[in-house]
Length: 65
Image 1 (cartoon, one colour):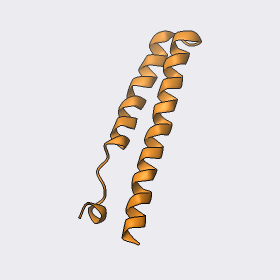
Image 2: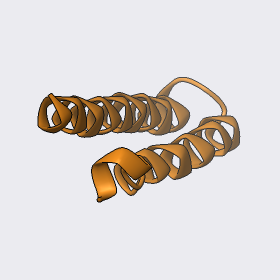
Image 3: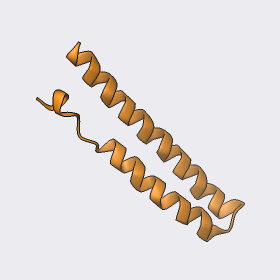
């Protein structure tokens, strides 16, 4: 059961990180095409940082042992 929980935890973190990265790329592209470029980039940069945080998130104490 522990292995399944740890696997699902890591898959969840990777999924959230991937979705945030896609949203950031979308804002970055929209920043250069439709919106004011500065606004799109200012929105995309924090989302990219948040997605990197999810990609590098450590496992819980239960899974790290």
